Image (cartoon, rainbow, N blue to C red; front, side, top):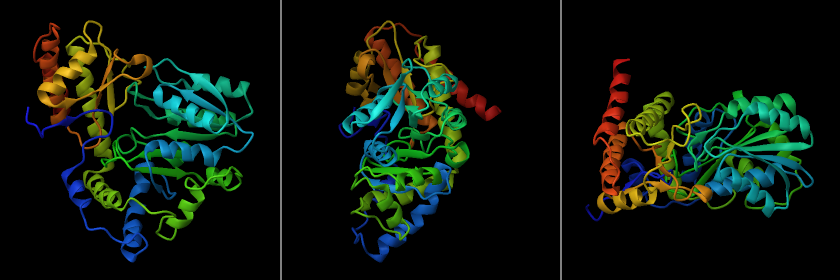
Length: 385
């Protein structure tokens, strides 16, 4: 492999489009100057369709986890009890945040690799009417599961007065979401996944219902006070120094999404998911999730007859291809392929063909080219249809 050649196909950070990289090299400007106000004024309306909301989307300098923490400290009042639905490592992160703030929470665990069942959540809510907020993950990065948050929000609102707070860090910008229509009260994402930026920004949108709770919440907060971000954004500003270079890049990302069209963006991610899953089926290597629960942004593979860490090392050393391993109890048991953001069907074909060579080198017997062929057939079938 060439020393400067690296193919990053983990579930985030994801590759950056060249035009976005160029945008981020613009000369620095004053964060309180007119140029920044005009930049934010241009960005604001273009973020709303990605979230499916008429509300302003707040921009905070920080990782996706900072957005999750902001969601907790702004919506949960002292004495509140919350429900956290854990479908993987990032659902578990909500529990750690709540523990850090001494918040009483009910933990509802779902088998890793499966999506949550809204009907079971309904029963849980009826048994625990004291719950004020429900926290869940849209795409569970650690397992490649896409949870049915639309159905979840409906069930929560029909059976309680709780807020619905959703971690959309690893899928917003790649999958359909209609925050207002579906009844999601708080939605969070990060910059380094489908939003095609480096790490460093988190985005938070809140419903009118959520704003009422936030405004009445006496919980102390400073940097993560969402009211400060809302009030500043109304004036095309930020309460604290923004990550200006990332904002330059964000404007270009939004331009790229607008040029492609959101529906086409969603279709592209669905196609890449189908190509990837078909490839591993053709290679007779099990997938962690079933088709109904699968995420269009990350695919988790659970091999039975070879060590996924051996495969990861081989393809990284020989080809510069990085895929992710498993987390927590899935460590050394699965590997995960990110196909989100700046990624195309051509990239998927490259990933699969490279992995096939890696599989041979691990000692696994496969029909070389079978996975690539299956992915090609999915692509060609789409063209025929």
